[in-house]
Image (cartoon, rainbow, N blue to C red; front, top):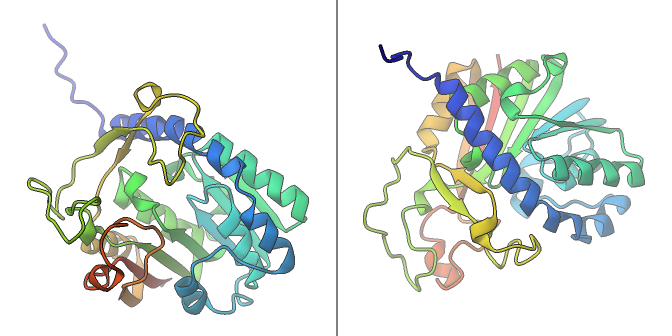
Length: 276
């Protein structure tokens, strides 16, 4: 008699996240070599994007800010320079967290970093955040957007605020190497399956990983339509305060398309939400 027990979706999510963890441990080696953030952070500077600085403003109202998917901590520590009195970062990559802790030790900032799957963010942090912050190429690595939204909600104190600045998924069905907007046949804004790949683009990580793409860990990305993201957060108990689409880019996804043409479609979007 065959085993007909259905697979647990949570096990599949953990498997894909662990594969992404291995890939980011390889890719994060490149962040270890980046020194630009340490040139500005000790002097009150920031690695945040210009549009984020405008949207975030003065963060002196935030006693604790938690940065989900914090990478090597540069943006997390920038939140402190904007006024947040204490900052906490969470990331799945061991190497990223090692980098972040090294920077914090050098700077002496009031910051702590946790290495874990975002979905397993420690419950000791529940209800303690005045601000939860994330974005810029973060959501595409997650395989459970509803679970993510519930984590955001449980971390916030009542009245706490959530800020997201993220790449707009409307651009994903287009050819990134084309000289003008060119739809890739078979791709859709509404596709939901994880997409596997190996290796990192030369302009991003380059050859810092030290081995061919075919020998690197498989990583999984997926598109989350904006409506799916917003509805997940609403279902988790947050109130939408502001949703904005931006022509601003944080990454040159289409290096061959003229800027005036890329600006014809939103490249990023931002959310301000409040836990009611």
